[in-house]
Image (cartoon, rainbow, N blue to C red; front, side, top):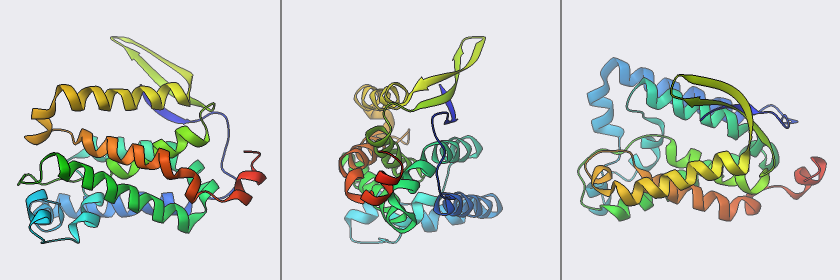
Length: 218
């Protein structure tokens, strides 16, 4: 399933922070294209370095690095689909704080899985998972325009957010249990996704503005 956008509503305010986050991710990716090995070596997160008390700044910088075109395009698509509505009910500054803290919590969850790993960790997936967790709590009944792919069959339809996001989360749980070895050997950081998502779902209401919720009939 590939989400395309929220078919149930549009944000009342321009999602400036979401747009800026996409721009910053794109700029970092351009740096990677120019000299990827140097950028990743300096700014990607290595769990063993963090547990040794080094390179704490990479907890933040690693959120803006990606492993290739598919990685960044997929992440930015999900951010654009789910981010504007969450920014709309939190407000720009609360949303930015929420996004960054979600990423930090996601990183911490992944480090707990393998604190001695020397494999660089990078990507915005954990922070975006937090946004998706918040979306599930705030807009569970919204319908998301989604491309459904079954083999050669492709169809654009509207899927309830609770099904789309819930299915995504269950897949992260399943993959984290069934492919733990892959995670620790440089595969997808499923535990970061899970940690970010749970944090987002549990704290969304703390970051949301009551006034904005009332104005939007929520």
